[in-house]
Amino acid sequence: MFDDLDIFASVVEHSSLNRASRQLNLSQPALSRKISKLEERLGVPLFTRYGKRLELTEVGRLTYTYALEQRQQRSKFLEALSKFKEGEPLLVTLGASLTTLQTTLPPLVNAYMEKYPAAELKLNTGRTHEIVTSVSEGKSDVGIIASSIQEPGLRCIPLFEDQLRLVVSEHHPLTLFPKLTMDHLSRLPMILFSKGTWYRRLTDDLFQRCGIDPDVRMEIDSFEAIVRLLPTIKAAALLPKSYLRPELLNGGGLVSLHIKELEQTQRTTCIIYRDSGGLSTAARSLVQVTEDVFLSRLENT
Image 1 (spheres, rainbow, N blue to C red):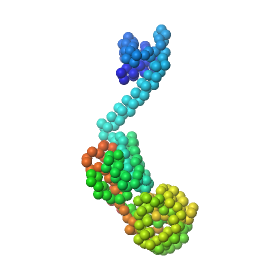
Image 2 (cartoon, rainbow, N blue to C red):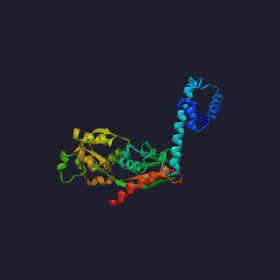
Image 3 (cartoon, helix red, strand yellow):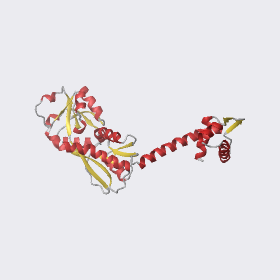
Image 4 (cartoon, rainbow, N blue to C red):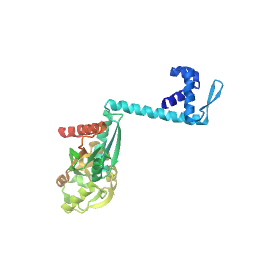
């Protein structure tokens, strides 16, 4: 039936049985029989015939629209099938927390799409335990999390080490101190990450261990928003070193300051995936690109 729909669409597009028969390399009687059989199968006339002139009926117009949709779907299917045969990735689902995405996603997506421009990358976001569950249950092919885990059935590969850094405006009074300690953060106006997130728990644990009571002015779940607000409200923030690219700091008039105690916040960002050997071609490709991007950086440091 689908071949007959293609033939019917061709007749519509050529507005003539004669022209369509030449295009399809069919005799005109054979083409007429195919159209008649399609009408019999559907139980409705598709054309109103005025001598040699054909005019679509209302059902004929509906059928033509359907035929075009089927043609497009078949074209997409054949294109996807061709890519699959050639070993090119199709669709892969990546799970990651919003905070992890902000530090790892830009270089990863750039590298992946540059190598596989026709691939589709779908993102699932959530907290670390939600991403682990998503990968375990097969809802995400691959996950990137801000900690190392030992979970049955999952493989966890370290990508890079990270730690928090103190970030302030280049005109902030703290930039004048030759050496900073955690005591300098006591009652300091700060923008912190939203409660319930991994970074906020890390920060709160650090403050508790050091006996620090900061002056929390805002709680935001976006690194970009924090960076933009720091100069405006003359506050400080603790942000992951991996996010603090030179162009970000220089362009925003910010500086990253070292405090010895912040080394205690070091954590490992990892990629996780099921260890059952059932990874799709797309998922295997994403894992390979991710390892290439981040492990090569590790080797060069």
